[in-house]
Each structure stands twice: as C-alpha cells, then as structure tokens.
Image 1 (cartoon, rainbow, N blue to C red):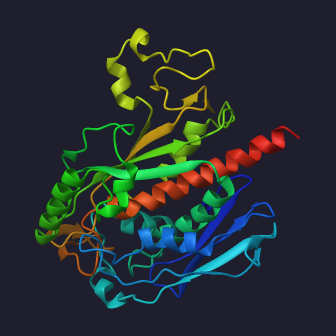
Image 2 (image 1 turned 180 degrees about the vertical axis):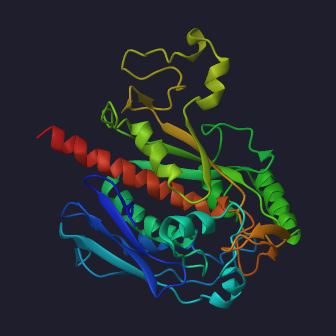
Length: 354
C-alpha cells in the first residue's frame, strides 16, 4: 500500500490498523533543538480520542503517545521521531457480521477490490483510528511553528449552521462544550440534534472551520505546490471529508471583482480578506481560513440492503461503537493536518533563503 506519508521536508509516515496491536508514526525532517511539551501533545490527543462525551463513539482508548526516538531530555535531536499509540479496547467480534459483507459508502468494497484482502475489524487501515497518529504528528508540528496559531471549530451539523464569521466568534468557547462550537446556544442545539440522530440509529455530517493566524508572508510554492492546494490535499485526505473551500470559497461566485478584491492598506495589509490569506498560492500575512465538509458516518444502526463478496444481496445492520457525527472529534485532526502543511512550508521557506 502506497500513500502512507505526508509532507516533503517535515514528513509524517503513519502505520497500523484499528484493531491491530498499535498504531503509530515516524516524523522525519523535524529540526534539532525544538523543545517538546509532552503535556501539550497529550492535550491534543485527548481532544481527538474516543469516549470523551455522550455524542461520540464509546470506544475507550487512552491514546497515550509513547515516543521511541528523536527526543532527548525534552528536546528534538534532529533524527526521526518514532512513536506508537497502543490499541487497548478493540471489540473485533462486533465486526464478524461484515467479514464477507460490504457496508454501503464505506471503504470495504474498494479495499477488497484493490488489494484482494481487507481487515474487516473496524475497517483496518481505512478506519479513522489512523488519524490519532496524525494528531500526534500535528502536535509536534505546532510546537515547531510556535507563534503561528491554528484554531478549528465546528460551524455546522446537518442543517444547523453557525451564522457568524471566524472574526465574530469567541475561540475561548470552543472547548467549553462537547460539540466544539464557539457559540453556546448553537452548540446546545447541535448536541441535542446529534443525540437524537444517535437514537434513530443514524448519522449526520457537518462542517469544521479552521483559522490560521500570524502566518508570515511568503509561505507557498507555485505553481503546483500552492499553499491552499496543499491545505486542500491535507484536508481531503481525512476520513469522511467531501469538500474543501478557503477564503470566499463558493460564495465568491456571487460577487463582482469590484466587491471581491482585497484593497491594500499602506503597510501591505488589506481592508478585507476574501482571498483567505493566500494570493497566487502564497500567504500574504492575513489570517488563512477555510471550511472542511464531512459526510455522515457510513456505518449506521439501521437495516440496509448491500452485497457480499460473492455478489449476493443481503440485509445488514451496523453493530459496535461508532460516531453519530464525526465533526466534534475532527476538530483537532483538521488542526493537525494544517500544522503539518504549515511546518513543511515554513521549513522550505527557510531553506530557500540560505
């Protein structure tokens, strides 16, 4: 299987399956001399881990990261940073019924057809459990970036959408509710809705908004490595993501150029930020902001018709522990992937000036 590494200079390679012994990764290209706060890494992992509230999967995993190399006395050595995250709460029997059955809209069918074999226990490598390794890698990337601030939050669940821009919300409210929406009233409505969806044995999608502040001017490598192109690739590589837009996004098509153009101030900043902090694929110093759309989780607790590996039509119903909505736990994953992109371009920018 190819495609297990992300990044050019600051590169993360992940390994492991949902119901295997462990998952983990190797971070290559992290410079020496970066002070690592292990408590900060743990905080990031806790934001993603299962079982943290009543609206997420009840699988209980501590998601403790054990670093094997590359960090000595709290400081990076410049060598590859290896780490593992042990799996401890698998219930593989919950998946016996899909050993030869494909869940609709899941990776079951495509994995089987591509490789001729699949780990049906929790989806194996296609499981969102793999994203724990991304969060660990992103936690290291965040500490390399230091002054660059990356903040993501839930801005929509189903048809419930926060009608405020990133500049109008209070980021301090994000971690005060299990949905991770920066508006208390909307968060309460979203939480109630997700609980109702779970009772129905169904799932629902949502949207995560991400804001990156204090980005220096000049990150991004045209023509094919534009900053927003790499952010789009990063976000679209996350499980269940179906859409990415940055800046004015699709709303920009309703505007005229005279309305959309970000006019300059004398210091090079702009009066507006429809460009989303990126022009010509290069950061311009304004906040970068984008939206990531997540589809409903494929595994539902309702009966559906599907096919077996022999092509037989059968009725199946999901079992086990699954998220009724992924976006509350996706917030730290979006931040992590953004951090990996920014770390890569930050290092590339430093090299180009040598």
